[in-house]
Image 1 (cartoon, rainbow, N blue to C red):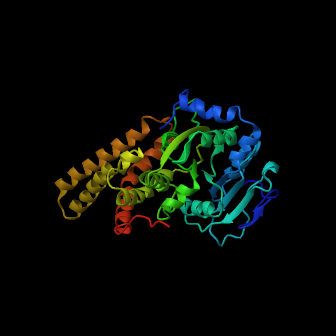
Image 2 (image 1 turned 60 degrees about the vertical axis):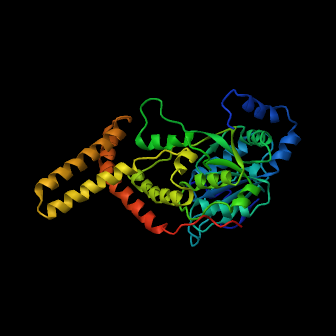
Image 3 (image 1 turned 180 degrees about the vertical axis):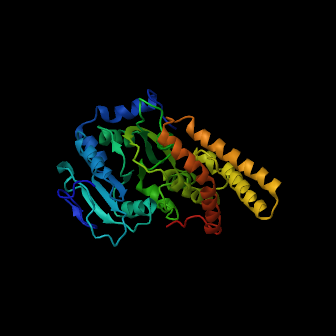
Length: 372
């Protein structure tokens, strides 16, 4: 945990069209504040509140330190939504740097996930822009000034401006499966690891849909609803680092819960949402086929149909082996990675299938989020 003896915050309490690098639009964005007086940058940042949903990761203090270390003015408010279980009486473990004293406020969440926590945060402030950050990112050294440049470069129909996410990967070996999964955040569209939204746009679509309980698809859902309402979205020039978090052997298995959220996305946005959100389709159809082969093999064996059972078992084994190799070959191929891939490649297809089926049942009557 982070240092709790200095700057700890009690729950609910206050603590003091897309540019490419070198393009004309990126240059205009940088010029918007490069020659601006500090008062102009400060004026822009006074329209910004930062909202961070958190479960008390040690990385939260690192995020605050990065914000404090940047030169020049800071955003008007920094709201941390403590999304740990409400019955947890311990203070949120964090260290608030001196430059942020008086700006940081902690609001209690309801342990219902980042979508609900972000809604709690943005609805509690009155600033024109809400800059959402995850609690495991590290804003760049000039993040605040770059954010001001991003906001100065867009027009009044722009609802949000995304940062450029950088995921550091090892340079002395191939990345592991988990590292490659995290690296996908660098090319993901409209992710709220660092995404600034206009408050009016959030209000116009009712904010985040709280039926998304995980940090998965809730940002794509919001972006699609915002775009469908006639707003535009842009990518800015500010950069934020998303380090690869430590993870145990089963992180990829737990991640299969997102298959239920994909069902909700299809219910809400139609079957073409993948293309509109520029989201990779994943391997669910193959997982369903491998799981069906395994179940068929077991059923045939129970029924005494040995030849059919052997054939289905061969299909299951081939599908499982193909999946495992697809994960092993791009990786470091160390003993620990081989063991992890062998174990989880057999478990992931049935777990993914179970979450998909649960999602189809849970969201069978899903309707679009009411606006208010």
